[in-house]
Amino acid sequence: MTDLKQLAEDSFKSSFRRYPNSSSDDVIQKIYSEIHELEDACLDEDIDRCHLSPHCPELTAVEEELADVLLACLVFAKCENIDVEKALRIKNEFNKTRP
Image (cartoon, rainbow, N blue to C red; front, side):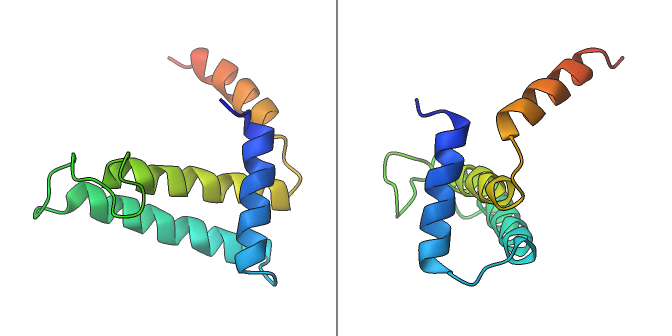
């Protein structure tokens, strides 16, 4: 498995190859868009959650949309120079202390 820093770098390059003038605000809007697509995939009553993605047939539609959300978040992290691995570790440790 590729580490998160490498995924962030790869996702950033892919995103900015397609949308070269994107700002952090644009990436946030992309995150919202991907969340809505995930929600649609989860709530679509015409298909079950095992429905395969037309783009990535080894994934369900829900898995593909979740991956899009996470990858868009990694692009944002790269735009903002956020060490996402560090942030996740620290936040996870904090969450362990919550009642």
